Structure formats: structure tokens, C-alpha cells
Image (cartoon, rainbow, N blue to C red; front, side, top):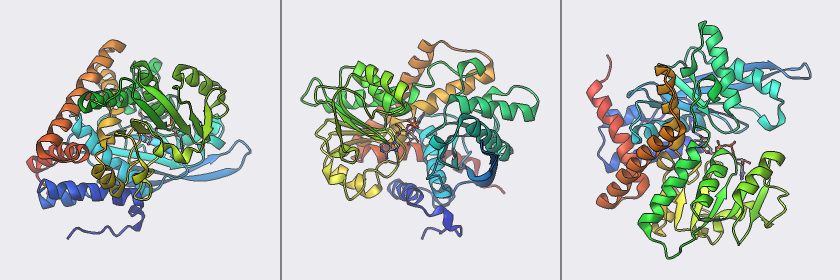
Length: 423
Ligand code: NAD
């Protein structure tokens, strides 16, 4: 019988889902009960009030979180998101997925995540700067290059990472670029970081297509979300000759049967902030993106979007999780029964943390690599992880998600058993 946490704030839909995935994999691999129990809860969670003065002079308090799920294999690593849905349970779930993701990719990290509950799109740049700096100050005791290293996530970007690095460095008394990844290159960022997650998603789709041998030369793709992950995935799939026929964002959906000119759409979105109003193709109800008759679906926006209620509508043969947790466990079962190949997020969207790891290594060594080196090392790790997952899923006749979790959880569990339980 698994334990319940006394803090009811953990029990949101996403955390329950992450725990359920762990419970299922623990059962399948006969995981040590003590290790399983320890992995079901985050190691450390911090909730902070983040007061800032808005541009109109009014003082407003935002709620921020930093959750470290595990640090068995090294410091914890995970992004910071600014979003109105941020809450403790969701941050904890994302931190747990980061643990499995880092372990699956064989990175010397545990998982963490952070966030501030706010409406970033309604805030000015100076308000966002004050928010980022004050949030950093409030979580300062938890972060550091040897302890816990944040990175960008939804509605945070390299500019915000530079403010976090600057705030932390001011407290420490000298420049500490290794405290955060996803920074601009000019302050110790790495070449290739901005595009890393989308590149990794596109690479996994390519590798899956190679194995599944679909009866088409130009597979079609629909993508939910056209931010960092969605747009870069689209860019590289388009470059590889796939036909991206639909993309959506928070404002609406764009469909073009003949294939969207992705570089042109990216230029439009850079200028207008959304796919809305793009002059080519047609608009469609963004809610219906998952039911489109395409070969590949890439959810690259939110969690819990493919559910037991709509999973039966999916016609695609491959779903690559660009976002974290877009498929609920019940929906996962439906997709599996339909024979759909789901590339789990801990593999598909791991490119970001892989190149974040490279950035941290370069910062610590004060020795920087060329973009070619970064990209070739990224593909090396992604390809190895994909093959490990695929081969294990075939050998054990389990889903790619189960295979990926078995590898990710297995490495952490082995290290936990070897290190033992203190005291
Ligand atoms: P982003 O802020 O750059 O983009 C988010 C996109 O989602 C935007 O286009 C937004 O309009 C769209 N969106 C928001 N709500 C939507 C809705 N209801 N319907 C359709 N579209 C909607 O964020 P991102 O960095 O691209 O992250 C997207 C997802 O990928 C998140 O789940 C994040 O955790 C995950 N992820 C990001 C990275 C990374 O390196 N950026 C790495 C791993 C995983």
C-alpha cells in the first residue's frame, strides 16, 4: 500500500499522473519498495511569495515554487515557467519527469522544476525582470551550479535566464554562469541551446519513421503550440521533407493541406507574436488538431491535452511528446491499443536538457564548443537513448514509455540502492 502525502497541494491531476506512471513502472520492474516510496515524493519543495512593484506603482505578490525531486545522480536540473496554471502539484510532477529524463539520457543530474503563477503576457518587460530577480532571490538558498540549475520553460527565455544569472552572481560576489542554463551566448550560454529541444523532437520523429516504415514518402504532421519547441520541431521536420499541415497556438489554428511554409510562418510569428492572421492556408478550430488525418502529431504546448475523452479521435501513427505530460495515463492506454507509437516526453523533448548539460559543462570548464560539436554530441546522446528505448520496448513487449521509464527509473534506483538510506 503506497503512502499518501499529508499536503493536499501535491494532489493535482498532473502529479497524480506522474506518480501513477512511476507506480506502474515500479510494478513492472519489481522495484525495491523502499526506493519506490522515496521516489514518489519530491526531496525538497519551496513555496515563496514574490512581491514586486508593478509599473503603475501598485505592489503585487505572486506565488513561486521550486521543487527538487531527486539528487541521487548529481545536482538537480529543471526549467522555470511563468504561467497562470503553475501550482505545487504540477511543478512536483514536472520535477519528477526531469529525474527520469536526465537519467534516461545518462546525465549526471536529478530532476527539479520551478515556476511563478502569473500572466506573463500581460506583464511589461520591466515587471518580468523584477519578478525574475525577486523570485531568484527568494529561492537563492536552493540553487547553485553544484546544487540545482534552472533553465527556461514556458514563457521564460534566455533574457530571463540572464537576469537570474546576474541576480545570483550579485549575491555571490562574482560571475557564476553555471547557475542557470539557456542563457544568451554572451553571458556563458552555449551555441545550439535555443533550438535543442525542437531538434531532439524532430530527430526522434525521424528515427521512429525509420523504424515504422510508413507507406508514404512525405509524412504529414500537426503540431500543437508554436513556441520554442513547436516551431523548431516544425522547422527541422519541414527541412527533412515532412509536410507540416497544421499548427496551433493559444490564439487559434492554421491548416494548409499543401504543407505550411514553416520558415515563412516563423518570420510571421516573430513579427506578430502568433500564427493568427497568417495570410496563407485556412484557420481551423485549434481544439480539433488532434483529430486531423496526419501521420505524426506533436503536442508541444500544455499538459493533459490528449485524454480518455478524446484519445479515440487520434488518427496519427506517431505521437511525439514535445510538451511535458500531454497524454494522460488513460489516454496512453487507448493510444497503445490503437497501435500508435508514442515517443514519451522524457525521450522526445530531452534535447533541451542535454544541451543545457553541455552548457553547464562548458561554463564549469570555461571552454566553449562550436555549434557543430554541440549538435553532433546532442544527436549522439539522443540516438543512443532512442535505440535503448526502442530495443527494450521490442524485447520486453512494452510501450516505449514503459521502456523509457524502466531505464530512467532503473538507473536512479540502482544508484539509490548503492548509496543507501542516510542515516
Ligand atoms: P513557449 O512558451 O515557447 O510556447 C508555448 C506555445 O504553446 C505558444 O505557442 C503558445 O501560444 C502555445 N499554447 C499555449 N496554450 C495553448 C493552447 N491552449 N492551445 C494551443 N497552443 C497553446 O513554450 P515552450 O518552451 O515551447 O514549451 C512548450 C512545452 O514544451 C511545455 O510543456 C514545456 O514544458 C515543454 N518543454 C520545453 C522545453 C524547452 O527547452 N523550451 C524542453 C522540454 C520540454
